[in-house]
Length: 90
Image (spheres, rainbow, N blue to C red):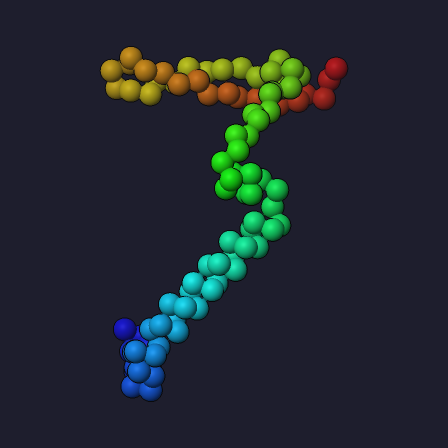
């Protein structure tokens, strides 16, 4: 242990509760900050279902799918969505 000599100065019965209490305070502070500064986390935390955004028609028209084998037996497959790069031409 790199800092093992600290227990010669601070008793473990005092140091460990202070350390664990500090970790708890920091964790609660981070959670409170996330809850108060984001819009999505309180809805997620309360269990409300999120509405999935639909893909715009323009984006759907410019995508292609490529089949990808997901299993060695070939019985399963996954689709990968690859967006076409804009060419700058109308």
